[in-house]
Amino acid sequence: MNAFIYDHGDKKLYLDNGKVTVPYNKPEWKEGLKYLRKLYAEGLIDPQALTQDNNQLKQLGENPDTVILGASSGHNMGSLTTLGAKSGRWLTYVAVPPLKGPNGFQNAAYHPYVVANGQYIITKNAKNPEAAFRLADFLFNTPDTTLHWYAGREGTEWRYAEKGEIGINGKPAIWKRLTPWGGVQNVNWSQTGPNYRSSDFRLGEAANPDQPLEVILYNETKQKMEPYQMPIDKVMPPVFFTAEQASEIADLEKTILDYVKEMMARFVTGDSDIDKNWDSYVKNLDSMNLKRYLEIYQQAYDANFKKKK
Image (cartoon, rainbow, N blue to C red):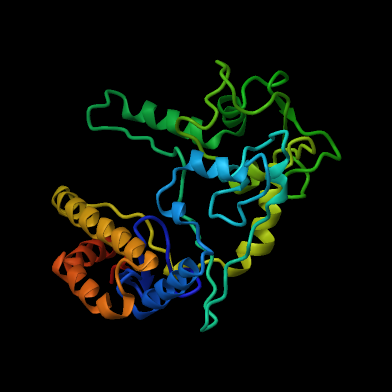
């Protein structure tokens, strides 16, 4: 749908001149649905794509007899094949740049506000909040600490990079992993727990030619996605709700998004005619109180980000 209008994240919220909005009740969304319907009717979209789970998708990607999976969405090749498998199938798939729509629209989703595993909360019941804060600062802002909790012991699981070693991003490396990533162990937190890895640190890991996935993903992203990334002023940032807002938004969000997913499947498969039923679809969204849903998000956005005069 990003060839027609901004389709960003699970909640699909985006900003239009500071106003919180959604794409799925707009004419561009309708045109995107009609395009998907055309692909489906021509047999270019696998009917299973609307119901299968990730394991079933991988079975298609690793089909032993012949290659039957042409293209699929996913975070990387490991979403549709098995990374490192003897078949080597995962190395045959490459990223497709964002499609350009009939009006020239071409967008790649952009998530600048995502901080994975960055949660650290000090409650009002903390007996020593200053010490708790210092611990947070130690965990988040000390490079040696980051490497210890993320990779393990210096000299055993990792070491600092030597001269001439190149990182994932093609720049001089910062550190090098000495043992394979993952697996059951008791020497590091891996990606669990409060942490901060800047882009420079994350991409400063020495490239491993025997495990080229990270270099492949970095280059594909830089070359094919970054040129079309969603403008930052369009991206809906995370917001905080009051208890009352959170309670109200929870019911509205589930009802609305479930309906959008249901109707997307029905429109694409032809179970519901897009041209005949589009207006009633939009009216149903209105009756589900989409206006109130956006009002709550707008209130939360304004409270967090609107400049105070």
